[in-house]
Length: 581
Image (cartoon, rainbow, N blue to C red; front, side):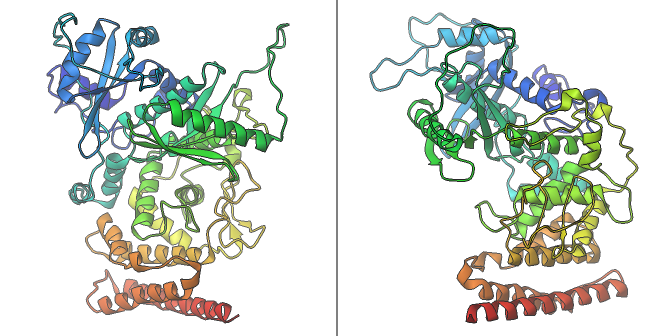
């Protein structure tokens, strides 16, 4: 049981928790290193969460105060284990998630639930319900004093002003990074709702496909998700292996088209089923011509954006790998959260697809740096060392032959941790590392933790750790790579030059830049470069009042600015020649 859950239960019982050490996060206390004794392998974690969703229902109620009456009613049908509250919308609707002790108790609740027989609703069964007012025929319920809500308003995201106020109370940048991670990461409520949303898709398919599984992957489960992140799902109709001893075999319908064409047809039908029959699912969009056909939809009841595909399991195994790296050292996740936040503030990442650096690419850049920090011991091992430590139970190969084998149990690894640098030191080291990285000729690779020569002329090449022939940053343009190099240099001198040593200063330096006025279309490349130049003109105006720790630092800042301006002029000239052609 997590520290958060223990604290919540003590509070429900009226027991003071001021002497109970631990923070308010759902999973980990401060500097949680995911101790070997409590480590849960990724696939086991998914299965535990799935079983938890099978024992749960989501009930829309009148208000948060309805939990007492709801608890009393549900207690007549099963043993209630935990209750969580959240609200959604500007004119908020209130919801309570209930987990029962046994799945049989949940099944009993669903059997006793009813439909409104009015001819206007489709009688679909799911774990999503609403609690109507009692009528004269309803038996009187006894109030139970043990009823309590472990979480109230559990999906609320902290606002920027409150976040920066909390960060300002920290004494060091390292503490700020931990606080940023603690206050913005996906919490217990968010995780439960995502697995319950996945459970709804499984229920939709269970009639024809009783072994169907909807696997969450990506930020929702790899430990790097923040509040409000999307839910990525891979739907598998079955993962059951053939029973060679069985003489009875199901008759099945053979596909009459190619695998891709059949996949597109299946996804089109599933999209129709989601749109027509699943309560809460709206804005269903079928993107079937993409390299990986997907169905996008919004779940109103859980307020989650969902992407559903029927591809192979490589996305799940990639999430497993990232989860492993995050569990190896408590510094990994706060560092990645901080760098992602910085990239968002300076405009390097974008929520819309395009030629920008994605959060996934940025995460791999951080992990590659942690495998080989200059002048220091590694924080993380290479992927190939995990492959060499793998046992027979770790062997996974996808249908298309992608080998996803690597050690999945931290307790079996022999990697010696000797890097004791602070989070602040690792943050500064990241910016300095990529200040000097040669993106023109070198590729980033996590497999052997070494720099490789780029196999093609992509502006940035980051090797997909599992599908090694793919470049996960293939979408990134040359201009965005140059901007990344400029921004890491700027961040390095901001952290080194400021006397007070605040993480907020790094974020504010990005917000002062007029990035919102930049046009990202192809026809205005040269204009965008001119806008970037104005950023450094502004910096020159501020240079007279900027204070530095010493003359050496001032000289380094001046050199960086000069080098960056020369690089921008070269880009402007190149873009001008290209436009004249």
